[in-house]
Image (cartoon, rainbow, N blue to C red; front, side, top):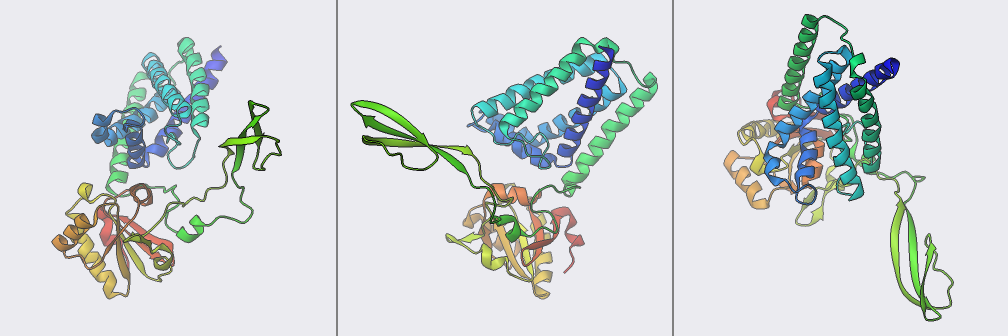
Length: 364
């Protein structure tokens, strides 16, 4: 039992630290995932939506700290009980999401590792088994250091997590796992390879044969049946290849200009996914930076999911000399974790991407 506890201790501790640090690198992204869980179509807890970012930061820091406390063996009773309660809650959540197909990605490892709902649930069940081993064998969890050193390690870890969270929120994630990272080409991200796997569908054909209804299942071919066709039910049994970027548009009055604009040699994108939630003072910096960009031969566009009236109000208020195009809000949130933010592209390749706190770092 002692060795089993040690193995479980290492596996659980390391996984919690890795999972927590990946999400701590992008707490804003995890908060978007929590908002999805809080939505009326999932858990129906809309009153928690304004608290999503605070909850996100708290949860990921707790995740990292519990992993560290487990590895150093500090406060084992508190640590194991906390781990057990957390994993029971997340196991319920991932089962609910998988069974009712509510959230397609739990966000357990941020954008670094994508898991299907059932993969997330399976991962949590395995972790639950390891944590139960720790729970029943917690007497074997002994501290690695003295109480004083353990307190120091715990305190320094907490402070480091808080400082790192503050840094990535005031700037951008230190490591970008998304398909819109610097150096990525948007057109390439939207392309589908010729040999990419295609989706597989199952067709359940219903016929009336000899006065009775019968079902014939095929993978596409119309069955040869001597009877009267009633209807057919289609089910996807295997997903096909989905490109990393599959929902990118730059629309104006219902027309998509993405293909044309992504061919520009010098393109600046001002992104504000929701102007009602934007840091409005930052648009003063946007006006200054974009004016400089235009002087240097760049085409400047805005991208937002807000209404054209709202966009025009921002343009008039801050003297912006460019037009806004419509893009899906989720897409804009995925592109950059700042509202507003600026991207610099050349023929669809992202060369610079900055938070509104870092506009002075842009080079034109």
